[in-house]
Length: 594
Image (spheres, helix red, strand yellow):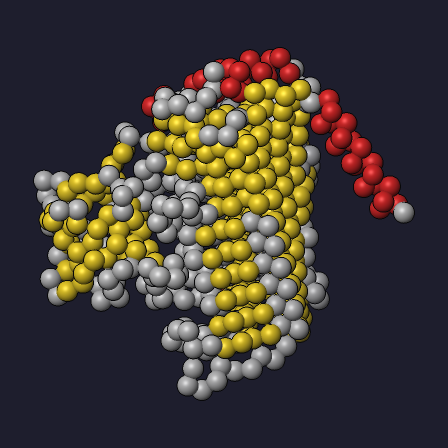
């Protein structure tokens, strides 16, 4: 009865919101599908509508069509985006900043971008929903090519119709577009028929010097690789990631629904310092009819220093050059002890800096980088100020706490600070992750996290990773309450990347594991539960765990197949290092001859 009452109350509130919301049609402001670049026109229209709505519930409609936006004719915004190249100045197709109570309905439209740019940004908003919008680029910076022939004289390939390319005076193949060009030194190979990443190819080094044109094909004598059979598609790529597809910062209650990101030269969706995010049917997926095999340059979705609840469900993630979802905080490294309660602490990774890390009143813990031991100390921030005088662009903070820090926390030793206040609950449910590079899902939050009813289909690397790293990526933190249940894993781990020790890999980065006095993940007898999943695999390793206190593995099934040749160095179904309080089911061994 109580649940029924709550549902009725929520329904009435939503009905009231919709009834009161005023609808604005962007076509009435001159935004129509044309060959012109529309970013400036969209910006002017949204500015007029925002002033008119004045925070009252509003619905903005973008009538169905294809809307061209170009980087050279788009408003430029200064953003510091985590886990990206920090180009700072971002041409933006649609910028939603400082809105309240807004529904932006794309009505199934496509935002077709040209050049290097950020298609959609949402900043400092409350109660904002974006729905029914597709994002794509007319000329992706990743160059897809098809292997035509492979002989002792090298590989002949044919670039896809989307690729604008040439060969320079030194014979080097390169791609180009609107105010950009790119030379390629590596690539990811996709089976031309199945779209799976070709087994045991991982990140390939590719030499595209001394090339010659042959009609619409390229003869590459320096590219020699017997694994590249004719028909293989190769995504030639650099490692640049200047702009994501969608950027969220400092929002409260954001909803993305029925959105497709077909390409971004960075991640698909990036959120930093947001509270409560819901993604439903947000697909990072291949566009129909273009013959494309890749999507984003990096992760499909990525959440940093967020809090509240992150719910991601019913979504498709395929062809990415990295993970489907990564949720983590950021360790600041202690660089100077100013007094007993005050330190200077810095962002350490060159792609993550320039944004707010914490607030007065936040709860902070400290870890020793070498062993990842958490110190028996918790502090409350009494003051925090960027050394540069402003948050935007800062690389370090001066932070004072309500109590003395442990005496060993000095710049002479490696210590990191983690903000526990900005950590989220996470739900990752009903999603499909397939044919992508690196890994499937990464979870690094101490709050309740559930990963359930997902399909991990040929994720290439590890399907699920629990990490924690205060030495390289500086991505915090420890997992304390996680359940992985009723998922299906199909032929994961066909390639080797970082942290790929098993299909499910619990792999904190601990340089001095033998010196560790505590355990990084867990803390209760059933902190991490892996239950009732199905593993369909051709190889041995199912679960790897390092530095865990409290692991339960039960009710899982394994189905071995002969789809690929076993190759992994780990020959155990379950391999554990420095773990305690574990209850792990016995798995059948990989049958001989498989």
